[in-house]
Length: 172
Image (cartoon, rainbow, N blue to C red; front, side, top):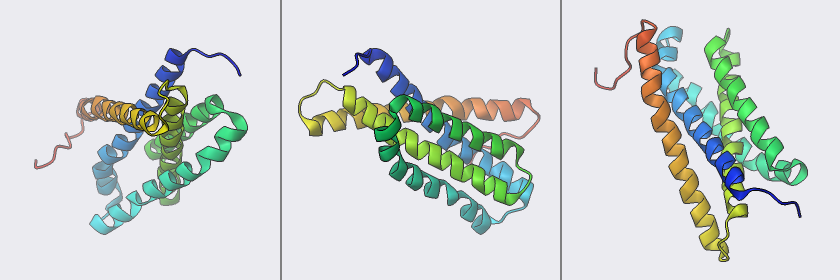
């Protein structure tokens, strides 16, 4: 068995979960702009967003066999790349199918990140009881997801405002 720095591995897992949180909140932040740009009604906007959970489900199902074959490091890098490509696709889409594919990509990468980082933190935990070990990993990862969501939402709104757009606050 190879030796590794648990603090470094834990930090990588937390960064992965923070990235997952950022990617999930970004889609919600840009949805009002997409709805306006594309002239979507509520039903069409809802149909567009349903591609995210499809990608999440696919990523959650795929990560186990991939980790067993290629290890944690390769999968963390790959899933971050897939999420980044999805975010780029949303920024520069030229057609609705490309937008849908980008949303699926965000979900796919996010599903992999979610499962991968939970497994990674559980693997490095010193807790002997497997139930406690998994609970600790999930709690730490959920806190990190929320940190990612909080950190990006306000900055995203400030960016929109600085680029000449309206602030997208609820109730205004």
